[in-house]
Length: 447
Ligand code: ADQ
Image (cartoon, rainbow, N blue to C red; front, side, top):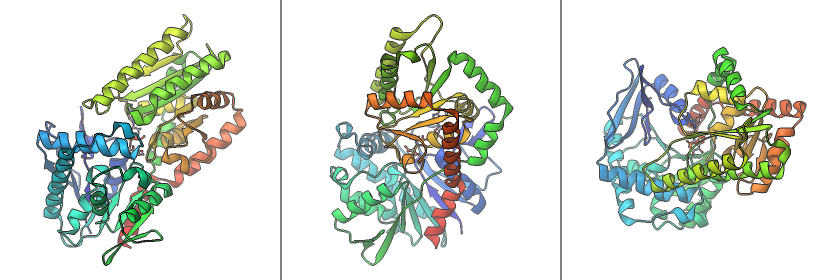
């Protein structure tokens, strides 16, 4: 049976050598399964974007849903990124409720439903991805008799928060068009079940009743491509680059942060915590360096430009206060890197400081734990990954003093303890292997 994957974005990107699979969780998780079974990937034809086709040898067909500028702005820039994204990450003051954005979201979800039902053949399985397409499973249910899976990559918030949405019931009903609904953690499953119950759907165990149907809700944590990251960890080129980064750091210890520049990732709070470390634990001055990598993201949204300004300002202040002729306390790289380059940063760092204010999972934490040679993972307790990476040092990303104290502990951790924790973490990441994710989800859907 063929598979139809539906997501906002296409799984390919244009490189100087031609078309390549996109870097990031979704493409890595789903392309191999789609190649193996054959099938279609349906994605938005982002307004103004150059059309691309899959590489010629691929068994994957790419189907675009062309959107007008207005539709794209309303559905993506408006409802997805100014309503659902901040709401699900508990940034309630950033939520901008506008009826016309919801209308665009509904219209675009309908366009997706038409495209998918046009491509669907009897027996095909449909797998819908993420917060851009909450209404799609319901719209598909009205049109085709397919097994439908839905996976939500970001946190499902507590029902008290979700109820802020005037369209909450319609959105939950849309999700419940699926046969199987997946989240990264049991907490999000629980939140979703309570939300469904609030809107009057009977819940029994992990099942929601919708008329005659029963919808299953399960935790399916996403992992990383462990084989790929093991190769990178052992690559001599990556090793050489890692040593060069250590020389550049020019300090005994190197701390690393890697994120898209997004307000949910806690980059600003993290810089403030590092500043607190330098203030409150002055013996680290001159002995520690912090590299923060931030990938430009959603730069057309004003909130993201404002965040960039504030991060620039904090970085400037830290340098202004602490920089010495023989020591650069902070380097801030505002750019995208290849996986090889990221792996070199992971190999070089003594401490990964990954402190999102909320995060569905956070694959960077997994990538670091799996690739590092001898490192300590300091991880936000509010990331989905904290549910699984038990040997990380967990921090509250809002508590600057707590983060500074934990950094100090991480920097002083004896070798034996570091090795023990990292070894255990690698085992945890192994268990979350990415190919298994899609297979387990689809087996449960079809089973
Ligand atoms: P994201 O919010 O994008 O994903 P994350 O899970 O950390 O967050 O994935 C980021 C990916 O981008 C990682 O694979 C990382 O290697 C890569 N990346 C980050 N910075 C980079 C840089 N400067 N250069 C190159 N690559 C970079 C959303 C949710 C997460 C959830 C995933 C998957 O917000 O919570 O874990 O989907 O479900």
